[in-house]
Image 1 (cartoon, one colour):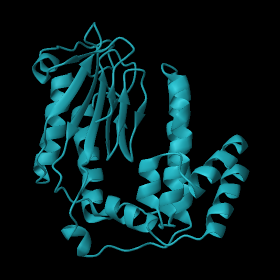
Image 2: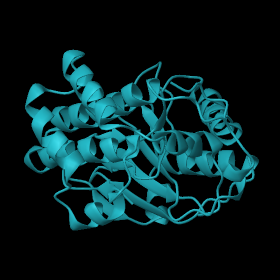
Image 3: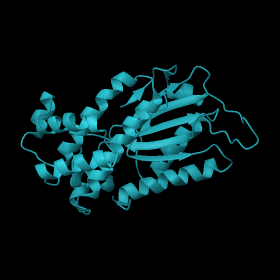
Image 4: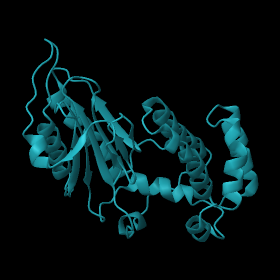
Length: 268
């Protein structure tokens, strides 16, 4: 799981997180205690028949900010996510890849300096594991993986720069959205519900009692939650700490989970 704590927060147990009390910071601030947010999330999952697994958590020294991840079982079925993966496995020609890369530069999705490295990575991955995985597979997923590999190389130089990390994550999301727009919708089939999962989905959480950032929920196969405020995943829900947070936030979470499970999220 992708929980990174290197800007002051430290790993703690769920019991420690739930012991932290929250206080209102202004007349319009509605505290959401970290433990309540975790329980809210687990209840939303339970209401939809999803069992929540183990969690990893971090707290800042003052206890005001919490960051966490909760595993979901491998057999959880989210047709929307499977549909996206299926569309990315669509046969994809070299000409399609070239056109998409040029469009990405033209539309500002990708800087021109990444054009050659991504092209080289697409043609022959620098990673032995990726070369073996994608050998003979010319599909959209291969191009996405090449782009992501080149894009994430910049993370090492942005160790504690939230703005840079956020731009890197947003760039990946924009690139995937652009690729999906050019692919046919695969539709949802019963096979998606019978597919064996080699990986699992993970819930990401963050919460700030001092209103440094909104209470946030995300879901992804490879989420990135960091105490430098990077918060990256395929599906995200966030809400301000206002008077209706205890009622509105769980409804928003369940709404997104329902759409993922039924496949009714709007496909790009």
